[in-house]
Length: 246
Image (cartoon, rainbow, N blue to C red; front, side, top):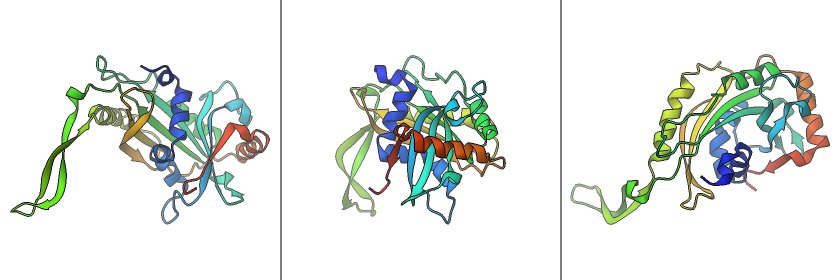
C-alpha cells in the first residue's frame, strides 16, 4: 500500500483535487442542501479538510474531533453560510488477503455529533480504496461496434476492456454496513469505491454505490454558522475554492 493511502487527510485531499471525483463523492450532500428544483451544482463551494472543532468554537471534548469535509457553498459574491455542510468520512482499505476489512468505527457517533453541534446539513461518506487485483483477475468486457447483427444487436469488435471488479464488490459490502447503521433521516450518506492506477499513486475511476439525501437539521446553531463565517474570513488558507464549471 502506498504511504499516502494510509493517511485519511491525504485521501480526502486527493479526492478534493479532482472535480469529477469530488462531485461523485459529495453529490448526496449538495443534493441535501439544494434539493430539486434547485441544482446541486448551480453554486460553487469552499471546502475545508479536517478542520479542528476548536477552530469553530465547539466544545473540544466532544466527537468528532474534526470536520473531515466542511463545505460552504457560494454563488458569485454571495456566500451561503446557511447551507453549510459537514461530512464525516471513513476510509476502508480492503486487501486481497482481507477483502472484508472494515473501518475501526462506522461514523454514526461522529455524524450524529455533527447534528448536535448544529450544522445545517450533515453527511456520512464511506470511501473504499481496495488493493488493485492482478490483471488475470479482471473482468473482460467486450467492446461493441456500431455494426448491427442479423437480429439488430450491436456486434462485438473482438477487443475487450479489462475491469477490476474489487471496487464494485467492496462498495456493495460497505452499502450493507452503512444501511445497518439506521441513521437519522437528517444524515445523508454515500458509499463510493475508488479504483487505483496500476502504480497505486492516483485514482483512475470510481464505483458509485448507495446514497441517501439528508434533511435539514432542525437544531441549526446560529452561533456555529457565525463561527464558520469568521473562520472563512480569518483563515481562508484552510479552504479551497472549487468551481464546478470553471
